[in-house]
Image 1 (tube, rainbow, N blue to C red):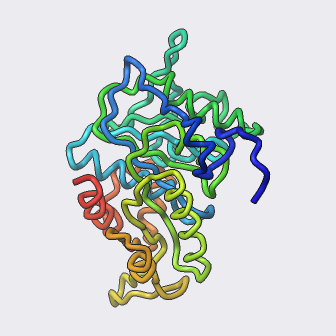
Image 2 (image 1 turned 120 degrees about the vertical axis):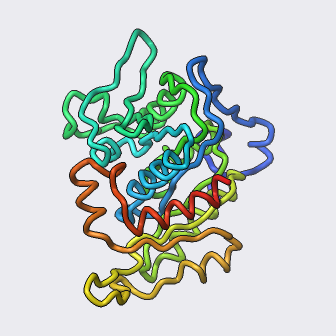
Length: 276
């Protein structure tokens, strides 16, 4: 156990010191009314977290909910690309307004503020965490039934800032079928437990490929263990998403909110369970 430096903002442990210095959640600004906040997390990169975040937002919007999507993966923002957003966010003095997708989902991403989408974000942790805070305090989100946070992979600075400062109602863990998945899921579960945030469900992406000719399912990345792991940790809601070339094409063309297919139907059923 490292020696305590009494700086609770840089630590995730729930100790007596933290109890005496409880960090207050950030207040919503006068231009925002967000009813529920759900973070989409993953223990490692490359598992399709941004894809699942986007599909959850699309599902919520189709459900008739006023929906917002914050691209909190500051150094690797990909949400605007998936929705085909090319315009920049409008800022008036100290107020920033999100950009709406064609279907009406409100989006904020660092790429909507950068002059060029391909400019690298070479910032240290405190600045990244500060950007996340500003996405909450300085953006006028308007009225929303639910906001999804597309979080960066792992359990680093931005994740800690989000848990400590934002009123997160629950998390969705995105994973894949590889053998090391249980360790990765457990890391996310342990951090959520430390920060007293409920786990709403687990989504296993790239779970299988369905042959378009014979209809048989092939588990290309190993046997699915999502239900086994969910049962082990007492997680009620799970979903398995197949590899779908049509979905990949929709993301590449910026048309994810126009996509219709089995993965969307699966996410819609999952969203019904976690949103009620």
